[in-house]
Length: 121
Image (cartoon, rainbow, N blue to C red):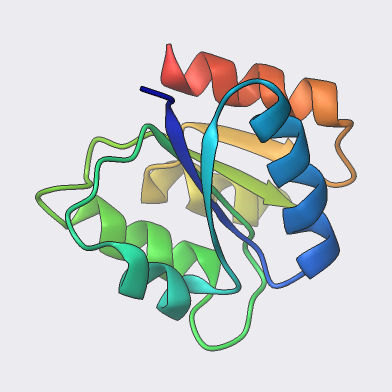
């Protein structure tokens, strides 16, 4: 059974690029355009990892991460934050919020897949 990764990013082009890279390595991928859409997909299904942007409409990535870390079924799912955000205080907030990895955009697909592989190991 393939490992399942949820991609959350408001940029469709980013989701398409990362989805393609993951699917080529045998991952199943769920996509959401923001945190609220991602919450609608959290229906008890098993996830091996989540990759989430920070700056999104409706529900940003940090709010989603905080929700996830308080949800009994998903609190231990590894999360990588994929963002253009570089401020040290934001990186600290992401770490405090429970992220397992921080990936700066733009990120080559091979590096991205390597991070996801580590999260799923």
